[in-house]
Length: 465
Image (cartoon, rainbow, N blue to C red; front, side, top):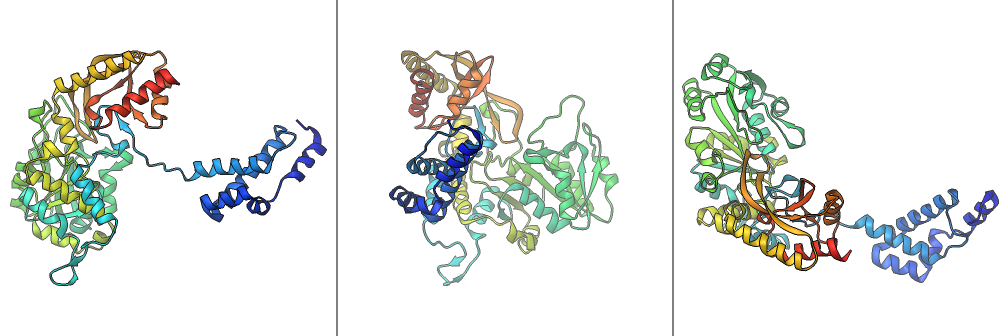
């Protein structure tokens, strides 16, 4: 180490310029790998690190140009490394918002690939040879599936609700129960959306009890709609009551106001046969009399991120002409994947083809067999593993307070937090959960074909490292 002001100055004088480093063979190779702009940035960052080390008197007596260029390469590799990467979801949360919500079916993935690499008929009519509408690609499938008069696709359900209120209620009143003034992930709050839309919020009832008469008393000549927000990510129990959607629809029709239902989850199938509590479906919302139903594409529908609106043609047609519609429209990849997903329902193959429903419908004995096979393999490889009972969550702000029985692979190690961190940071990241001091992994949410990779990662983390 060289100390003192004179020693530091001598080390600073030894530092080469960025241009000189770029002229070296290693510098030219760095440019070939990253381009001149990034190579220049990387060398500047590497030289800055050396200067900091000199200031801290932590630099070596001598350093080579090769070392500086190698440091630049390491920094650039980290700089441009993708941050959106695949993981193995062994958390047991089926619709995991932080992990991308619903995984797509093979057909939906193929549909996206078909239109991603070239041109497509996004807004082009082949028969007429002229401009068409992107609304044709999924809207007719939505109408056929739900029985709605019309349908519309935007980029997510928050946008669907905002467009619905902006386009149909701006400057007028919207009545909602205090028990439905919800906040979902990311601080998205129904009252804030209403304010942004230009509609005026009229709250009725109390948190736990709202009666039909509360809505009736709140109706005025300036009332545009009643909004019902489904309890998708919370549950109120005990001394509670609220009118049914059908009762509200009958009252709304008699008073000539619209009824909007923010269903949220996009459920098209009955979840009760799989041991879950009842969840109102999109179709049930329409049958009850809602003028518009809004829901997500990437929750229980099992498709891509999208906001879907189905209902009366007068409402959809007005929303399609609204200026906000263009700002929140869905892109070609989402439309392609959505059309493929909806086709699964129309073909009555959702349980077999859509991953979310495959996971929900997966038999417990099949999960138990998988967990036992994994545990046996890992024990033989020297890993402390066992099988325990557990519960899987639907997630994604759907079906709060209800879960599915499952079998979990338990890694019986002390210091579960560091073990879970090593699994997350592995070459093939594994996301589990920690309970009672153990790392727990749920086979239900591990996709077909990922089991071998999961086991190799666990063995590497627990034995080989």
